[in-house]
Image (spheres, rainbow, N blue to C red):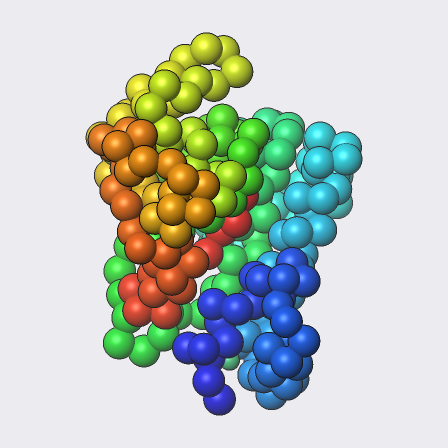
Length: 233
Ligand SMILES: [Zn+2]
């Protein structure tokens, strides 16, 4: 069993991004390890839900029903609490992404020796164009989860909203929205490899974000050493 090595690869596997030998290694592991198998199923189900949301832009009735059951179960059989009702009412990709997280995030504990207290989630932002939805989801996630710690790791085209002067679709500077989330304890980390590859000067990154050598290594470290749950948006 080598969950420490395999767990950080599951999302890339689910996205079909691994080379063939590594993919076979993951497949061999999940046939033997129930925990990683469950985690992989969660990733695949979340992806399927996101794909469906992208095509329909609404929460399917069957998923709403599952969310209701999950929230009721978490509340010890009581009806879903009002604070989470926005999940059921709010249509759209951002709500569904969070719904997917609540439904499918692995329920097992973090690796031994890792953090066991408040929930920790790393948001992986790899694409341009959805930063607004990511920040909205993140805000809802913080509202719904007292004590939640979030680290946003941006790489590839996902770094753009963290560059000076970047604005959202309403013309608001992302820096203002990022600053507000920083105030709520969210950390923003930018992949230096991406900056180098795209020949972007480090000075172009807004002051609210910090640089890390490699976005992927940072995500892997947060999962394997600090007990973070991975969420890709
Ligand atoms: Zn495993």
